[in-house]
Image (cartoon, rainbow, N blue to C red):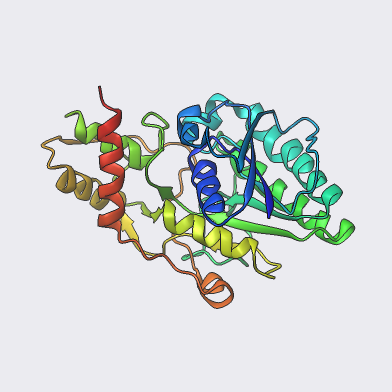
Length: 310
């Protein structure tokens, strides 16, 4: 297959490129490097099956030759990023999705949207199933990301109905692993870097809010299975093992053997109190569930972050 990946230099996009290349795909990666990094894909420089094009996907996407699949992963994805780039976040969710779907339509290829658990907002249903419509504040500071993903899903399904594009939607829950940016504001790099450098671990609120964490290797396998499936509904891809943030902080301290303290700060506006995917649909239709344990995944992430400290 000849596959286009937008956001190819990002954390998830770069791992996805690796996965596809390992399975014999020819991959064309697009990125404007707003939040992506060349370091994430420099190991592919000599791979004849990989081509990188610097391009802002909110503009028309012109790819010569056949395209079998378009995977739209371009977007700021951490609170630090989408609060710094609110307009760009909205544009890539709206215009970027439109252009990526247009490419899939033009080439007759299948399409996969990297949506997010953030479409559920601060959920009133727990765990979150795909038939839950969400509880989102559209005008809050996080709304630029939440609503961008919700709009992108609406666009994908409009193309399914109006243009018969084989569009698929993956709702991605918290994912971690090597290549995350150390300063991107998400809890895994925050805690690990704070622990490794002897700084206090910053817990927001009382630490009793919950999250679930999926290792990136498991995540990209789930994405690939969805891409190759005939599933025509959104699918949660994530790890259903749920834990409180305070327990997660203690886990990081234990694995890093750090003596850092834990400090508490105010909870950010609209920060979800719970987050846990119901992955029944992924288990049933994709025969997929996470396999990497939290401890093994965190050890790999810790080793990566150690290598970034100078």
